[in-house]
Length: 315
Ligand code: 8YV
Image (cartoon, rainbow, N blue to C red):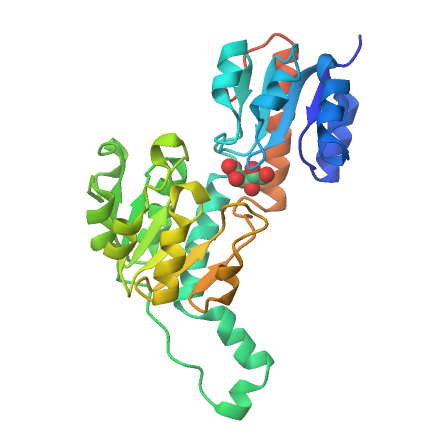
């Protein structure tokens, strides 16, 4: 039996490339010099798209593949997939929820600890000889006992809150409604009010058109000069211009960010700041989790082409 043709939008680790190529005829979009021409050439044979969370699948890509049946996303976030285009053509969409939840939550909490305690600067202080030459490292801010807000108490937000509880933080959250599984934590519907009572504000919302810039000037102002914003979701959830201005003017204390508009080419203004911790969108980036994500991408494709139910359907 001939192998289904797959359009692979971005690279995967070797341990995923090998089994993907065994099971499918793979067309590597990211290697193509002339993307439009490549799509015109291979599109008619493509039945499935394997993509990454941040790359998704555009309408142009979807429309270039008239026989497309399924899009399998390596990531929980599917905001970069044109769902309307998929719906119009009856294309199924899958993602990789659950397997990455704990790693993403770990990185969010690690960023809070690292930035609050000044660990990056402290290491430089040791390595560049400042400790010996200048003496003690400047004092930083405590984490335990302070107030944390979690904006979006889905799977990842819940795991963040659970971890914060271990650090004796006073936790509140915001979501479309109170959650039955969060009775220990205060529910605050309004993100501005949540920010106003938080020292640390975690953004853990699934991104969509409805959540675009949900963290705007008002939320950032409410978090204030002593507050820290932690984003492990998508850049589109934050008004990045307002964030940069607030960090530059010090009307926001600090920000720990794993995601950026236009990443990996982030706004160079971020690089000049001394009140940020910048990470290269790697909250799910552990070997264990990425192996599980790759497996789930392939299992969803295999299930679809075997006529079986999808494991983790989005559409
Ligand atoms: C991945 C992600 O970094 O799950 C998501 O939505 O953004 C991340 O886990 C990304 O999808 C890998 O390309």
